[in-house]
Amino acid sequence: MIRTSALLSFLVSLMALTSCQSNSEANPASIESSSWSFYGDSIHAYEDRISMQSAAAQLDESGAVAGLFEAEIVQSCMTMGCWMSVKGPYDDTVLVFMKDHAFFVPKDSLQGKTAFFSGEAYYDTVSVEMQMHLLEDAGASQEEINAVTEPAFELAFEAAGVMIADVPSGAPMAGDEE
Figure 1 (cartoon, rainbow, N blue to C red):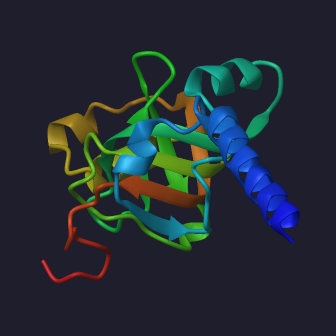
Figure 2 (figure 1 turned 135 degrees about the vertical axis):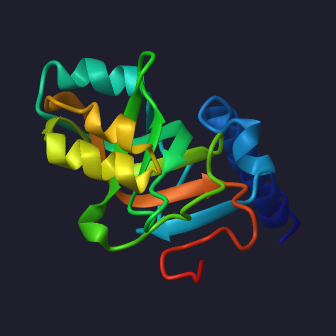
């Protein structure tokens, strides 16, 4: 009986040690030290993540890349929270749309926050009308909106689930009274 307990303790310790070592690179301290808010399908930040640079490189070879991505939020839709833009692979941003408008993220208070999102990255042509709509949702000036005259071909992402670090309590959501 003592041998079984000792063996069991040893195996549990070994599994814990192996688990910590194998995930140390994929699990930065920021994951553990932040409080997280979840939207849409459940996701796990401890899964292997794809960097924006890696996704862009893979997309040169194929039409879409599915997986878990991590990025810093630049802004979000101030009307409903149905999209957000995140820092892209270069000096650009990537639009992240919430799949089928099935869920929303807070409309404000997200700038600079870390987000994990699962789904599919792809290149898409964004029409002039859609660009204007997105600028309107972001609270851009009429001058900025009117400056859009050509479609844009850019990296986009359709998220089935989103996980955001340190969302302030009471952050405005779709349907909240202004």
